Structures are given as structure tokens and as C-alpha cells.
Image (cartoon, rainbow over all chains, first blue to last red; front, side):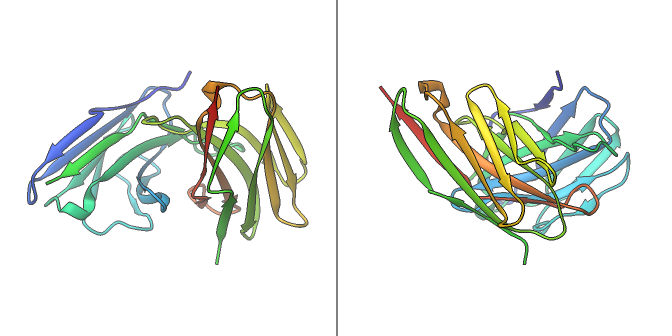
Length: 114
Length: 113
């Protein structure tokens, strides 16, 4: 089974802090994604990566950056956390080139910025 | 504009009853449609995936249908159980680079005893 793990289930940070959210997948997937999920808005794509050291902006990249130094690890960085970044953050991975490009999700990190 | 609309927004049913969730989409070009189940506090898990040529797909008590002409899909849950309480998300993939997924906002299902 594909396993996607995220470093924290719950995180509380203060405004202005630098925040790192880590995601690791164990299935050698090329594609990795970061989403945020807010009530009434559904999942929105922040950034994705097709390969090591490659990154692409999603629909809402402002205020975020990412890092992919190794294939299995994809990090989301909030350079200076703000209260409007309080949300559930979900990481996902998928196999590149697969016809059924199902994304496998991690358990999520609920981030609260005070 | 590519959109996925789900209805109802929320639903409460008694254990053992059946229910149907709806998904309408305006996504072009269409590649496939998935239904995900998301338990509270967890990440979404894929239930079914259907391509243009498929009009029904089952996964245990879950049956998804797809009408590509009317751009509608439904998820039917038979003999509901308490563990079916979750959010169900319809996701449509456009025939582009693999990240072109359009997510619906989900239907929250509560099954009560």
C-alpha cells in the first residue's frame, strides 16, 4: 500500500514564524502535491512537483514556497506565517505517466496560526 | 471555467438506508472522474475512478455512475453503516498534464443509528 506521511498532525504557530511542513511517500512516486482544505472551499492546490528539484505553482501559491531535494520528500514552507494560513494542509503523491493517476493523500496537518 | 458542483452539501440518513450523492461538472477536455471518501481529520481516500467510456463502477457497497453526455455522476451507497459518515469528494481530471484535477467541495454524510 502507498503510504504518505506528514510530519505533524497538529501544529500551532505564531504570526511571523517560519513554518515547515514535511511530507514523505514510500512508493517512489514522481509527482507530489500540497493542498490546503478550508470549509466551504474544498481542496485547493498550492504547489506541485514532477521531479526532484522541480516545482510548479498551483492555484494559490502566494505566501508559500516548496522544496524537493529528494524524490520521496516534499516540504511546504510558510516564510512568515499569517492568520489567514490557518488551515488543514494535505500532501499527496501520484505515479507519473500512470493512466489512472490517482493521488494518494497523507493524513493532513491542521495548522493554527495565532 | 472548469467547475465541479456537488449536491447536497450535507445529508443525514439512518443506518441501513441507501443514499445517492450527486456531482455535476463542466470540465473540458474530460479525462476521468473519481470519488474520494474523507473521514474526519484524515486525508481523502480514492473509492472509484471512471473514464469517459465507463458508466458504472462498484466498490463494495459504493456504486458510482457516470453520464458523460450530461456531465453528471452519482455515488450510491447501499445499506449505509455508521462508518460511512464522512465527506465524499468528486474530482474530475482534465486531459492535460496530470495536475489538472478539479475538486468539488464535497458532500458531508452523517449516518445515525
